[in-house]
Image (cartoon, rainbow, N blue to C red; front, top):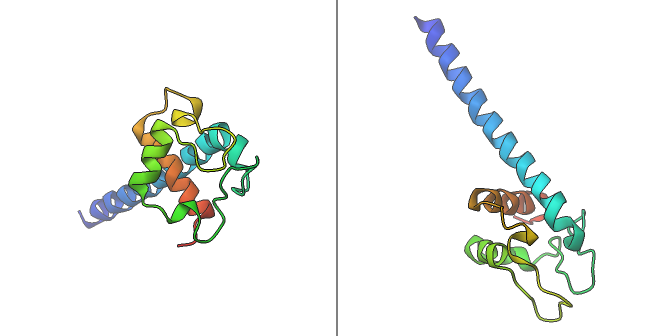
Length: 112
């Protein structure tokens, strides 16, 4: 009986770890497909006027609610030559995918 409890616990922990890995991989794939064109694969901004995610005190200092709103609805910052399109130009992106890509950006480029 004790063996089956440990087996269940290990399986549950493995599932949680796998879910986190999937979320991270999904966020990375979304970033590469939709965000890196303007923000760069290194997060430093690939085009003039695009914010760097690597700058301490930069755009990633903003709360998730603000950044999620900008990703979902689009945004044009001061001095940017063009606006970021809603959902990075992919209207099929779900709220969960938007949350995953923001999580990836924070983990990859954030200073927390």
